Image: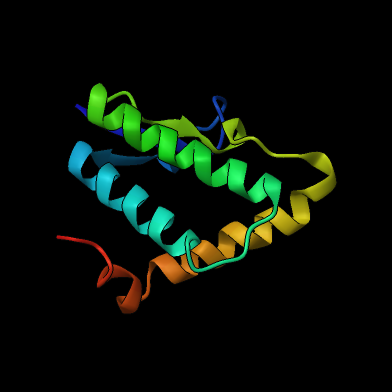
Amino acid sequence: MSNIIRLSEASSNDGWIVMSNQGTDCFLDLLITAADTFEKTETQEKLISFLKDRKDINEISPGSAGFDLDDLPWQKKTLQEDTAFLIGVTAEAQSERNAEKLPY
């Protein structure tokens, strides 16, 4: 079984990201580890907490950790700042130094 990450429930399936359970674990590990290098506001902590919860769900019930990006706990008043934060986290997640932090 695999996990699906999509923009929203209305997204067409050609825009979905489909990953194996192990791929999802690695993807979330990379994002969570990268986020540790940033100072975070309360709303940004909630965004990362959401990703941590998805990782926990994938360990308990593989194949059910998929989510829609619009399900993240976005706040209208900090949307621009939080979006920029997650873009930075994604860029850091792709770095070799971040991957070297993982225990596998």
